[in-house]
Image 1 (cartoon, rainbow, N blue to C red):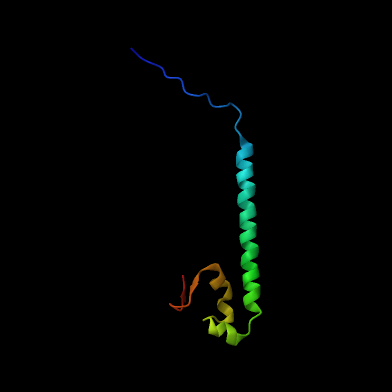
Image 2 (image 1 turned 45 degrees about the horizontal axis):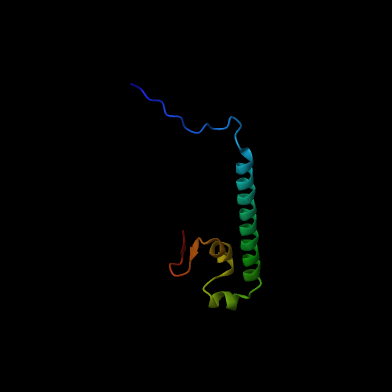
Length: 78
């Protein structure tokens, strides 16, 4: 004998609004992260070369350091 189990029926109209809200939220987080990185780069560019050298950077490494691609201990970029 075969039994048929009934599961909750899925709505025929997809709930796109939930995905839209997540998409907007992810976009807002990405924009905030971008502006935070730009502010950090701007703050480091305002320092003179001696101050940058004190923290182990040269001017050409600022964007990589803020982005996380530069590791001063290894003297190379990933």
